[in-house]
Image (cartoon, rainbow, N blue to C red; front, side, top):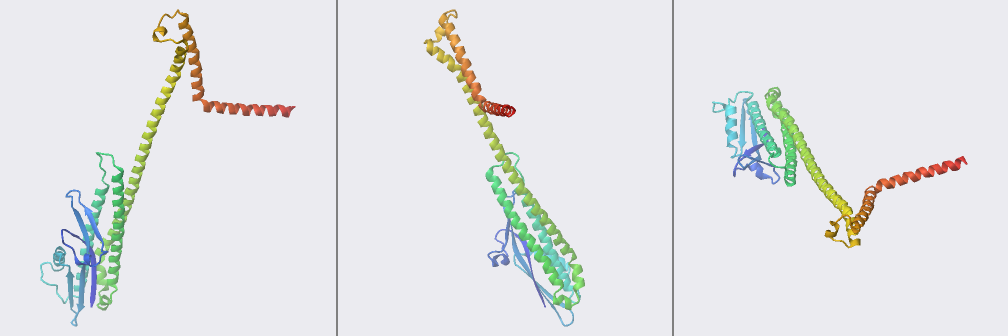
Length: 328
């Protein structure tokens, strides 16, 4: 007797929920957001149980048990197995082989649909909105969703590997060996096994794409941080330039104010007759003070260079003095 349980991921809507998904609290659940409809598509774990028995007259009896919510799958399997017939001809030696290969093929087909849906979800998550600059909160949320997708790819990869192991176990099952069906079932499982091999390659590509998108988001966030720092630096430079202009004007205005204060003059006297001795003395004193303040401003602005020049001059002077002592 042969008893095999096939687990697969199926898409369910509304309150439909297979018993396998409710049997264990940790049963995987994959939910994808549809940007067109605004709804979420749920993929849950369901199962197919296969019972097979060989009779004394070398005929086979098989029973497939599906969850009541998997009506679409049951119709598809019935069409695949029977076609227009009402039952499989029992005397055929490949009866059980056809049942197993059909179930495996349907599982591979459903998993292909799951990967297509997951890939569409990945594209919707990473599709940029070109109308506005991304916010930091949006980047964080997208990164979180991408990390969740990485966990999903790992879970899907493990399930594909489990199905491949199941296929190998079926070919080496005592029931199959006793009936001499190893060669037939290996040939019939070639197509679904090839599909699962393609699924592994697809999952590997999705993992690399997801990691690349995570790195891209990190680079974008770094770029925006650098841009913000550059804007702050420009603002600081503009403020420093404005402060420098104000300082320069102060050094020009201050000597004139001091000269006016010394002579006790107001605007009318300053703009009066330039031949007056007081005006000429005021202009001369203001010019001298302006030269002094400008010199102080220049020295202050170049104090670092002046210190370096004095340092190099002292070094050269010390070397020259040591050289003269050595010659004596």
